[in-house]
Image 1 (cartoon, rainbow, N blue to C red):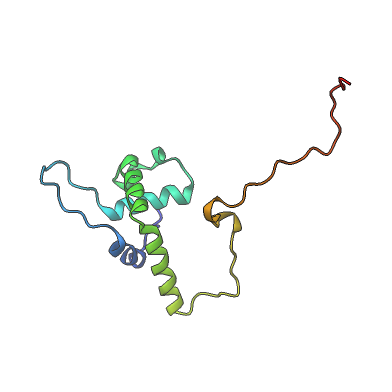
Image 2 (cartoon, one colour; image 1 turned 30 degrees about the horizontal axis):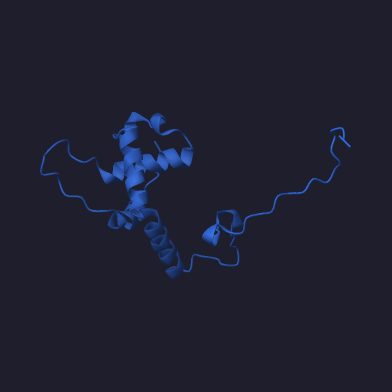
Length: 130
């Protein structure tokens, strides 16, 4: 199996993850964060359903999905993205001459302007009652 999560990438991601203490109630120990991230990367990169995550990752698909949801709500992905861009920028590895902004992903502040109803351009096919 190909390694999607290098040690270098893990060393950038790990400090951004929320810290958890063992539950005072006991129960099953929390699954390894690194294995969960490897499972998340596999699912997202392959575009597969969570339920198709191979057992070789050592974590269940539902655990990976819950961890993905937890980290999304904690803002982990934005923090990691900023950290990676900072690291690349410090190395001079970002070429800003080749930047694309996808306007479809830019949020419309306050919902944007509501478009007017499009007026018909052809005559009605219904017989006139007059």
